[in-house]
Structure formats: C-alpha cells, structure tokens
Image (cartoon, rainbow, N blue to C red; front, side, top):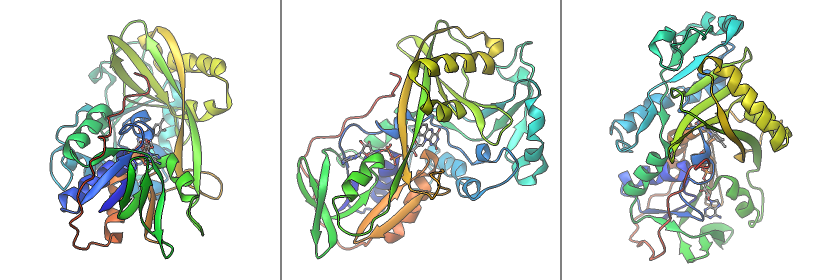
Length: 373
Ligand SMILES: Cc1cc2nc3c(=O)[nH]c(=O)nc-3n(C[C@H](O)[C@H](O)[C@H](O)COP(=O)(O)OP(=O)(O)OC[C@H]3O[C@@H](n4cnc5c(N)ncnc54)[C@H](O)[C@@H]3O)c2cc1C
C-alpha cells in the first residue's frame, strides 16, 4: 500500500495518478480535504509569467511554464487524471496597470518568450474594465483559475473509498527504514509519501538522522465583503516591480460578493497588525479597481503559511521538491499549479511490487471549505 499523508492538492493529485495505474494507495487527512493551503489559495494555475514581469525567464518560470497546458488537459479529461468535473472561475487571468505603470512592462515585451504568453486586450471586451474611468493597460494570460471547491469535490469522487480521516502521529520503522504510519485510527503498513504541507516537519522530527528542512513563508490575505456586487475580477494589478502589486479573486457566498486579496499586499502585510492591514487592504482595492467604485462593507484578515523546503535566504524555492530517505518520500509542491510536476517526480521513485493489501475500515475524510466562507 502506498500511504499518502495529507489530503491537499499534492496528495490528491498523486493518489489519482496512482489509481489510474492500479497501484493500491490511500490518503490520510487529519482535518478536511484541501482545508490547509489548497483551499486558501487563489486557484490560479500560473505558467510563471507573473514571476517574469521584468522580462527575465527564471528557472521557476521555466518549470511552471508547462503547467497550464497540463491542467487544461486534465480539465478536458485527457491524460491520467480526469478533472472534467472541475469548474473554472475563468479560462484566463487578467493583468492590468493603473496610470503610467504599463511602461514598466517594456522589459517583458522585449522578450520573445514572454510575448507569446501574454496578449494586450481592449478594455471594452472585459466587463470589469469597460469603464471610461479605467485609464491603464489590460493584458490577458491564457492561464486558468479553478473553482477550488469543485476541485476538491472532483478528487473526493475520483478517490472514493481511498480517503481516510485520521491524524498521522508517527512512523513505523524497521532497521532504520520507514515501513508504515502510526495514526489516531491505528497502524498502517506501507510505503509512505509525505504531502502534509506544514504538518510534514513535525512528523519528520520524530525520525533520527538528517532530513529535509522546511520553511514557512507567511501571508496575510485580505477578505473584503462588498456592499453591492461588481463585475467579477481574477488577476493581478501591476505595480511596476517584478511581482504583482495586488492579486484579486472574486467569490460569492451566501448572497454576498467577496474580494480575496493576495500579491504584494499579503506579503508585506505579515508585518502589520490586523487593523493596519485592513486599512491598507481597503486603500489597495480602491486604487486597483477605482473605476468600479467598490463599496467595502467589512474586511477580514486571513493569515496562512506557505510550507516549502528551506532555501538559504528564505526565498521562494524555484521548483517542486521531492526527496527520498530511508524509504520515506518527502515533498512540497511550492505551488498548487505544480502538483502534476510533483507527481511526475514521485512516480519513478516508487517501488512497485505485487500488493494485495486492503483499504482499512476507517472514517472517511470530509471535504474542506474556503477560508472566507
Ligand atoms: C494564500 C495562498 C494563496 C495561494 N495561491 C496560489 C495560486 O493562486 N496558485 C498556485 O499555484 N499556488 C498558490 N498557493 C500555493 C498552494 O496553495 C500550495 O502550494 C498548495 O496548495 C500546497 O498543497 P499541499 O497539498 O502540498 O499542502 P496543503 O494544501 O497544505 O495540504 C496538506 C494537508 O496535510 C494535512 N496534514 C498535515 N499534517 C497531517 C498529519 N499529521 N496527518 C494527516 N494529515 C495531515 C493537512 O491537514 C492538509 O490538509 C497559494 C498559497 C497560499 C497560502
């Protein structure tokens, strides 16, 4: 049995790849499927363009560049993972500048590789930008935005009977090798793959010897409830730097519309208290979408960590991470978009032997909910 610890996108995608190959596997989730980073994300399947706004195609931009096409294949039901049941928020993402910031994209458009990824569009073709008050430039990136609740639901159906609700509390070992897990529901023997995000390091610390180190990079996301709806927006406001100033996704819940805010605001916001950050979030929305005159009723701050392998200076690692030590596979995908690349790296590391093990009679893992719900 291949035991996958953690039911976020990494564990779910890997389990679906294994199921498609008839390799017995199960996912053990301590809370709810997708509930940690996965449902907290903005669901944007990046192809790396937003890391290359200065025109430089970094290593990160190269690996992730193949991901939008890979996801689109899965969304069409082509390939091993069939995600036809997943709904899209949008088939593309928008990038926009306000005022003269567009000039700073000169480097970007000087690069041929970059030009092929992005298209300048007429603001009159987009409901949220078709306003005389919009005075900037608008671009379209062919990178989808997923409805994450339907993503989790699709995997829950695909993996029916293989998703269990239990906390992994330690490892079973034999001669220094990991041969299974201890959980709140009992023991399970098998080959273990860690896809537990932030939960990975505490479990690794129960083992002797050298092990991959984890870093946490916090984000402070803004959640603005609007008094009246605006045309939906999914994309990034350019700030003139190499990263977006504000990333915006729009969501409906119980009759109200919410803007979920990331980007530089969420990175810088980790150093501010909630009151200060609420104020900044309101100002950021007013500036980024000024022509829509958004009226914000309430603003909440949602703090969440990104869990990743350690890098020397604590920066974002470039690529999905997989390492195998003492028969234990440890992984961090870095981005939701990179889940397929992560599974591609894991598959050749697995020992495939005849396996007649049965699924346990354990409780079924529930599906998680959005943090703003
Ligand atoms: C605010 C935010 C916005 C983001 N936006 C994007 C985006 O737009 N696009 C993109 O590509 N990426 C985005 N990311 C990154 C992306 O969300 C993550 O890289 C990805 O979701 C990580 O998935 P995961 O499955 O590895 O981890 P997680 O989703 O964190 O899942 C780990 C799971 O393991 C479980 N677990 C932990 N410990 C145990 C244990 N002991 N026993 C059993 N289960 C355990 C947890 O409960 C959890 O469900 C964003 C991240 C954040 C935080």
